[in-house]
Amino acid sequence: MAKILFDEKFLEAGDQSFDEPIETQEIIDAIKALNRSVAQINRAVVKLQQKMINRQAALESEAVKIVQTIH
Image 1: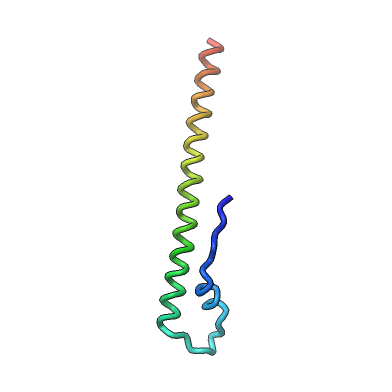
Image 2: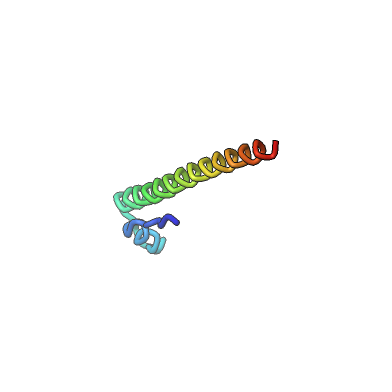
């Protein structure tokens, strides 16, 4: 299973209180970190989709062999 690693700047930004002023650069850094995490998730999803496609193809191939054997 894929591990998703969150950037420390993103986690630190999430820990800040709303009473404290947040610098624009901190917001930008947090968004960039979040985007990196989303990109990791997207890559993991693509890999899982490819595995599912490969398994489906293997199952269909096996089903064809079984049907041919029966006939």
